[in-house]
Image (tube, rainbow, N blue to C red; front, side):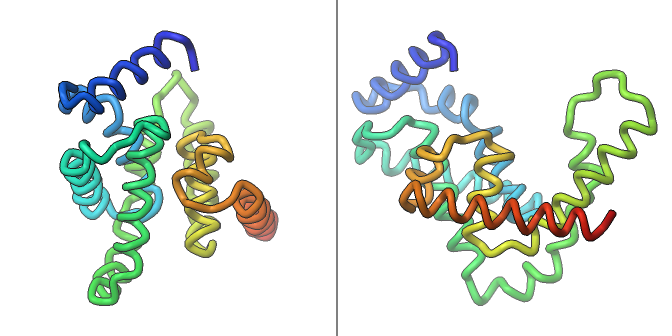
Length: 191
């Protein structure tokens, strides 16, 4: 992370703690990352949109309770991870979740990746790889999938993942190791 981003983050944290922060700027800065994580976790665009809005609503309502112990982005990601966990464990939504789980068109997800003048063959290959990883990640346990997505979709380091999930760093490493083994095994199996 470069110094300008760190100083902007520190300034936003100080403004939030003082109650003078521009919440719209906070939303604009962190919304894509939160949405990406929730979408990757649920694979349901409508639910991801709703939970992303809920995340920022909860953050806005709890802004006075933000102590500044963690970075603002980590705090928001923790709220999002808790919302995803609650959503997935909600028994009254299980039927709808199962029926809509496959609703996300992987073609649409691949189209969100920036195009760098790739050939049609490279695009097709990349889509197939994304589809295979999505399929393998879908079979992971909830904790393994959360750790996997935070590490590889959100590019968070192990300490940040530990803060977000409330797990110890060693436990995060163990879940990540098992998730990687499972995903690699499934990818090898499908070759």
